[in-house]
Length: 114
Image (cartoon, rainbow, N blue to C red; front, side, top):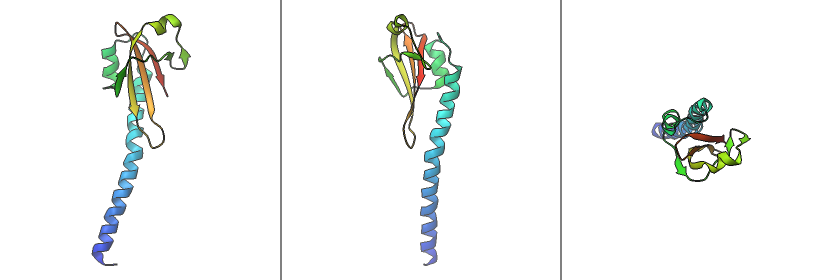
């Protein structure tokens, strides 16, 4: 193989390895950042404070998340939910999603990660 061919193969190999590393490292870093902020969330936090911690959400929905971590909320708490923010991290296998629900006054009433 000529020198130019070896250099081209080297660049291609470097590009493939760098892409694979970034595909694994970047989602892990983003997920760790969300996880740290998620652990700091407390009930009745104001939406603005939550967004300051978590950052800009991936999407906003009206579907309620009916849990506080793994504990099911009471029916009266579920009825108060007006908005849910989602934070999603795409990974190699399955996405990691953090869902946060707020009442009509913008207070955090539900959170769940899956």
